[in-house]
Image (tube, rainbow, N blue to C red; front, side, top):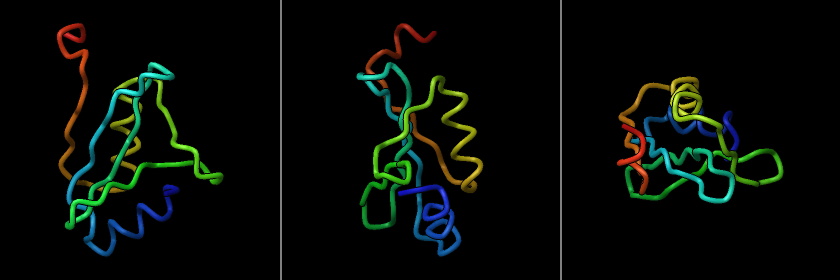
Length: 82
């Protein structure tokens, strides 16, 4: 889902949470928005390919561009990020 579609869902109050997920293939971070029914919507480019961001801060900034919602960070490498 592209950013404009995510903004539309946010405006409709359908999104309840953003989940930042460590992307193993690119060593970056992906952003998934979760609606009130538990469905996940990853941010993608116009071709439907999930976007990957270089840093956790960059991924968080994308969430704030869409709107304000709780953010959960999922990572298997939390011990290395301290």
